[in-house]
Image (cartoon, rainbow, N blue to C red):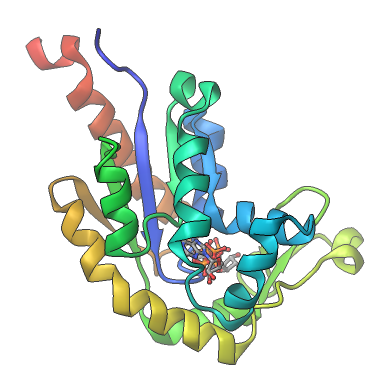
Length: 221
Ligand code: AP5
Protein backbone atom coordinates (compact mmCIF):
# COMPACT_ATOMS: atom_id res chain seq x y z
CA UNK A 1 0.00 0.00 0.00
CA UNK A 2 1.30 3.43 -0.91
CA UNK A 3 1.56 5.73 2.12
CA UNK A 4 -0.15 8.84 0.77
CA UNK A 5 0.23 11.00 3.88
CA UNK A 6 2.73 13.83 3.82
CA UNK A 7 5.41 13.96 6.51
CA UNK A 8 7.07 17.32 6.98
CA UNK A 9 9.69 18.66 9.38
CA UNK A 10 10.11 22.40 9.75
CA UNK A 11 13.21 23.85 11.35
CA UNK A 12 14.84 27.22 11.83
CA UNK A 13 16.20 29.52 14.49
CA UNK A 14 13.96 31.04 17.18
CA UNK A 15 11.53 33.47 15.51
CA UNK A 16 12.54 32.33 12.03
CA UNK A 17 8.81 32.05 11.32
CA UNK A 18 8.06 28.36 11.93
CA UNK A 19 4.84 28.89 13.88
CA UNK A 20 3.59 31.53 11.44
CA UNK A 21 4.15 29.24 8.47
CA UNK A 22 2.78 26.15 10.23
CA UNK A 23 -0.61 27.86 10.65
CA UNK A 24 -0.73 28.50 6.90
CA UNK A 25 0.50 25.00 5.99
CA UNK A 26 -2.11 23.33 8.21
CA UNK A 27 -4.83 25.44 6.68
CA UNK A 28 -3.89 24.40 3.14
CA UNK A 29 -2.55 20.85 3.50
CA UNK A 30 -4.58 19.70 6.55
CA UNK A 31 -1.58 18.08 8.23
CA UNK A 32 -1.48 17.53 11.98
CA UNK A 33 0.76 20.24 13.48
CA UNK A 34 2.97 18.94 16.27
CA UNK A 35 4.78 21.86 17.88
CA UNK A 36 7.08 20.65 20.61
CA UNK A 37 7.37 24.17 22.06
CA UNK A 38 3.55 24.46 22.28
CA UNK A 39 3.22 21.00 23.86
CA UNK A 40 5.88 21.88 26.44
CA UNK A 41 4.27 25.25 27.24
CA UNK A 42 0.94 23.43 27.83
CA UNK A 43 2.64 20.95 30.15
CA UNK A 44 4.20 23.84 32.10
CA UNK A 45 0.87 25.66 32.31
CA UNK A 46 -0.89 22.52 33.55
CA UNK A 47 1.84 21.80 36.11
CA UNK A 48 2.38 18.21 34.92
CA UNK A 49 5.53 16.28 35.94
CA UNK A 50 6.96 16.82 32.43
CA UNK A 51 6.13 20.53 32.65
CA UNK A 52 7.83 20.85 36.04
CA UNK A 53 10.98 19.30 34.62
CA UNK A 54 10.90 21.41 31.44
CA UNK A 55 10.20 24.82 32.96
CA UNK A 56 13.67 25.77 34.14
CA UNK A 57 15.28 24.78 30.83
CA UNK A 58 12.72 26.73 28.80
CA UNK A 59 13.13 29.77 31.03
CA UNK A 60 16.86 29.67 30.35
CA UNK A 61 16.41 29.18 26.58
CA UNK A 62 18.24 25.87 26.45
CA UNK A 63 17.04 22.45 25.29
CA UNK A 64 14.79 20.46 27.56
CA UNK A 65 16.40 17.03 28.25
CA UNK A 66 15.65 14.18 25.86
CA UNK A 67 14.05 12.12 28.64
CA UNK A 68 11.16 14.63 28.65
CA UNK A 69 10.90 15.35 24.94
CA UNK A 70 11.63 12.15 23.00
CA UNK A 71 8.84 9.93 24.33
CA UNK A 72 6.42 12.85 24.10
CA UNK A 73 7.08 13.19 20.38
CA UNK A 74 7.19 9.48 19.63
CA UNK A 75 3.85 8.85 21.29
CA UNK A 76 2.23 11.84 19.58
CA UNK A 77 3.44 10.59 16.18
CA UNK A 78 1.85 7.21 16.88
CA UNK A 79 -1.65 8.64 17.32
CA UNK A 80 -4.42 7.90 14.82
CA UNK A 81 -5.04 11.45 13.56
CA UNK A 82 -1.37 11.75 12.63
CA UNK A 83 -1.38 8.44 10.79
CA UNK A 84 -4.52 9.42 8.93
CA UNK A 85 -3.67 13.01 7.92
CA UNK A 86 0.14 13.16 7.93
CA UNK A 87 2.34 15.30 10.15
CA UNK A 88 4.06 18.65 10.35
CA UNK A 89 6.71 18.38 13.04
CA UNK A 90 7.81 21.79 14.32
CA UNK A 91 10.81 22.09 16.62
CA UNK A 92 11.95 18.46 16.60
CA UNK A 93 14.61 17.11 16.30
CA UNK A 94 16.85 19.82 17.77
CA UNK A 95 19.91 17.66 18.36
CA UNK A 96 21.65 14.61 16.94
CA UNK A 97 20.38 12.46 19.83
CA UNK A 98 16.77 13.48 19.12
CA UNK A 99 17.19 12.69 15.41
CA UNK A 100 18.77 9.35 16.28
CA UNK A 101 15.86 8.44 18.57
CA UNK A 102 13.30 8.68 15.75
CA UNK A 103 15.61 7.23 13.09
CA UNK A 104 15.65 4.09 15.23
CA UNK A 105 11.86 3.95 14.92
CA UNK A 106 12.02 4.37 11.15
CA UNK A 107 10.42 7.83 11.39
CA UNK A 108 11.65 10.04 8.52
CA UNK A 109 10.16 13.09 6.81
CA UNK A 110 9.37 13.35 3.10
CA UNK A 111 10.73 16.88 3.23
CA UNK A 112 12.80 18.87 5.75
CA UNK A 113 12.12 22.61 5.48
CA UNK A 114 14.87 24.82 6.88
CA UNK A 115 13.84 28.47 7.23
CA UNK A 116 16.98 30.61 7.11
CA UNK A 117 17.06 34.04 8.77
CA UNK A 118 20.28 35.83 9.78
CA UNK A 119 20.86 36.15 13.53
CA UNK A 120 20.64 39.95 13.51
CA UNK A 121 16.97 39.88 12.41
CA UNK A 122 15.87 37.38 15.05
CA UNK A 123 16.01 39.59 18.15
CA UNK A 124 13.72 42.18 16.60
CA UNK A 125 11.25 39.46 15.62
CA UNK A 126 11.32 37.97 19.13
CA UNK A 127 10.83 41.16 21.13
CA UNK A 128 8.02 42.37 18.85
CA UNK A 129 6.08 39.10 18.93
CA UNK A 130 2.68 39.02 20.64
CA UNK A 131 0.36 36.03 21.01
CA UNK A 132 -3.40 35.83 21.24
CA UNK A 133 -4.16 33.33 24.04
CA UNK A 134 -7.74 32.91 22.78
CA UNK A 135 -6.97 31.92 19.18
CA UNK A 136 -3.27 31.03 19.27
CA UNK A 137 -2.62 33.60 16.51
CA UNK A 138 0.91 35.03 16.25
CA UNK A 139 1.35 38.78 15.69
CA UNK A 140 4.26 41.19 15.43
CA UNK A 141 3.94 44.81 16.49
CA UNK A 142 5.64 45.95 13.29
CA UNK A 143 5.44 43.11 10.73
CA UNK A 144 2.00 41.68 11.48
CA UNK A 145 0.15 44.22 13.64
CA UNK A 146 -2.80 42.91 15.66
CA UNK A 147 -6.29 44.43 15.28
CA UNK A 148 -6.83 47.27 17.80
CA UNK A 149 -9.77 45.52 19.52
CA UNK A 150 -7.67 42.56 20.74
CA UNK A 151 -4.45 44.36 21.73
CA UNK A 152 -5.28 44.38 25.45
CA UNK A 153 -5.56 40.59 25.66
CA UNK A 154 -2.30 39.79 23.86
CA UNK A 155 0.56 38.19 25.77
CA UNK A 156 4.32 37.97 25.43
CA UNK A 157 6.19 34.69 25.95
CA UNK A 158 8.43 34.68 29.03
CA UNK A 159 11.42 33.61 26.88
CA UNK A 160 10.87 36.46 24.40
CA UNK A 161 13.46 38.82 25.84
CA UNK A 162 16.60 39.94 24.05
CA UNK A 163 18.93 38.07 26.44
CA UNK A 164 17.00 34.81 26.25
CA UNK A 165 16.69 35.14 22.49
CA UNK A 166 20.47 35.29 22.20
CA UNK A 167 20.84 32.10 24.26
CA UNK A 168 18.16 30.37 22.16
CA UNK A 169 19.87 31.42 18.93
CA UNK A 170 23.22 30.12 20.23
CA UNK A 171 21.56 26.81 21.17
CA UNK A 172 20.11 26.56 17.67
CA UNK A 173 23.39 27.40 15.97
CA UNK A 174 25.27 24.82 18.03
CA UNK A 175 22.93 22.01 16.95
CA UNK A 176 21.53 22.77 13.51
CA UNK A 177 24.32 21.25 11.41
CA UNK A 178 24.13 17.94 13.24
CA UNK A 179 20.36 17.78 12.72
CA UNK A 180 20.56 18.77 9.05
CA UNK A 181 23.09 15.97 8.56
CA UNK A 182 20.30 13.43 9.04
CA UNK A 183 18.03 14.96 6.41
CA UNK A 184 20.36 16.21 3.65
CA UNK A 185 18.56 14.11 1.04
CA UNK A 186 15.18 15.80 1.68
CA UNK A 187 16.28 19.27 2.85
CA UNK A 188 14.84 22.35 1.19
CA UNK A 189 16.26 25.74 2.20
CA UNK A 190 13.72 28.54 2.49
CA UNK A 191 14.70 32.21 2.56
CA UNK A 192 12.93 33.42 5.71
CA UNK A 193 13.80 37.09 5.18
CA UNK A 194 11.06 37.47 2.57
CA UNK A 195 7.51 38.58 3.36
CA UNK A 196 5.38 36.00 5.19
CA UNK A 197 3.41 35.38 1.99
CA UNK A 198 6.52 34.89 -0.14
CA UNK A 199 7.93 32.47 2.44
CA UNK A 200 4.66 30.56 2.29
CA UNK A 201 4.75 30.40 -1.51
CA UNK A 202 8.28 28.96 -1.41
CA UNK A 203 7.11 26.36 1.11
CA UNK A 204 4.07 25.45 -1.01
CA UNK A 205 6.31 24.94 -4.05
CA UNK A 206 8.48 22.54 -2.03
CA UNK A 207 5.50 20.65 -0.63
CA UNK A 208 3.73 20.41 -3.99
CA UNK A 209 6.88 19.03 -5.58
CA UNK A 210 7.18 16.46 -2.79
CA UNK A 211 3.56 15.39 -3.23
CA UNK A 212 4.01 15.10 -7.00
CA UNK A 213 7.14 12.97 -6.58
CA UNK A 214 5.40 10.58 -4.21
CA UNK A 215 2.29 10.23 -6.39
CA UNK A 216 2.68 6.97 -8.35
CA UNK A 217 0.40 8.25 -11.13
CA UNK A 218 2.56 11.35 -11.63
CA UNK A 219 5.71 9.25 -11.72
CA UNK A 220 4.52 7.08 -14.58
CA UNK A 221 2.84 9.79 -16.64
P1 AP5 B 1 9.76 26.88 20.49
O1 AP5 B 1 8.43 27.27 20.99
O2 AP5 B 1 9.84 25.87 19.42
O3 AP5 B 1 10.54 28.21 20.12
P2 AP5 B 1 11.61 28.57 19.01
O4 AP5 B 1 12.21 27.48 18.22
O5 AP5 B 1 12.54 29.44 19.74
O6 AP5 B 1 10.77 29.25 17.92
P3 AP5 B 1 9.75 30.38 18.12
O7 AP5 B 1 8.42 29.82 18.52
O8 AP5 B 1 10.34 31.42 19.03
O9 AP5 B 1 9.71 31.06 16.69
P4 AP5 B 1 9.02 30.67 15.31
O10 AP5 B 1 10.08 30.20 14.37
O11 AP5 B 1 7.83 29.79 15.52
O12 AP5 B 1 8.60 32.12 14.84
P5 AP5 B 1 7.15 32.82 14.71
O13 AP5 B 1 6.41 32.24 13.55
O14 AP5 B 1 6.45 32.88 16.02
O15 AP5 B 1 10.65 26.35 21.71
C1 AP5 B 1 10.68 27.04 22.93
C2 AP5 B 1 11.55 26.31 23.93
O16 AP5 B 1 11.02 24.99 24.16
C3 AP5 B 1 13.00 26.05 23.49
O17 AP5 B 1 13.84 27.17 23.77
C4 AP5 B 1 13.37 24.83 24.36
O18 AP5 B 1 13.64 25.21 25.69
C5 AP5 B 1 12.06 24.04 24.35
N1 AP5 B 1 12.01 23.07 23.24
C6 AP5 B 1 11.24 23.12 22.11
N2 AP5 B 1 11.47 22.06 21.33
C7 AP5 B 1 12.41 21.31 21.97
C8 AP5 B 1 13.08 20.08 21.65
N3 AP5 B 1 12.84 19.40 20.52
N4 AP5 B 1 13.99 19.62 22.54
C9 AP5 B 1 14.27 20.27 23.68
N5 AP5 B 1 13.68 21.44 24.04
C10 AP5 B 1 12.76 21.94 23.19
O19 AP5 B 1 7.62 34.29 14.27
C11 AP5 B 1 8.32 35.11 15.18
C12 AP5 B 1 7.86 36.57 15.01
O20 AP5 B 1 8.29 37.04 13.72
C13 AP5 B 1 6.34 36.74 15.04
O21 AP5 B 1 6.03 37.94 15.70
C14 AP5 B 1 5.93 36.81 13.55
O22 AP5 B 1 4.78 37.62 13.36
C15 AP5 B 1 7.17 37.43 12.92
N6 AP5 B 1 7.43 36.90 11.57
C16 AP5 B 1 7.30 35.62 11.14
N7 AP5 B 1 7.64 35.52 9.83
C17 AP5 B 1 8.01 36.78 9.44
C18 AP5 B 1 8.46 37.34 8.19
N8 AP5 B 1 8.62 36.58 7.09
N9 AP5 B 1 8.76 38.67 8.15
C19 AP5 B 1 8.61 39.45 9.27
N10 AP5 B 1 8.17 38.99 10.47
C20 AP5 B 1 7.88 37.66 10.56
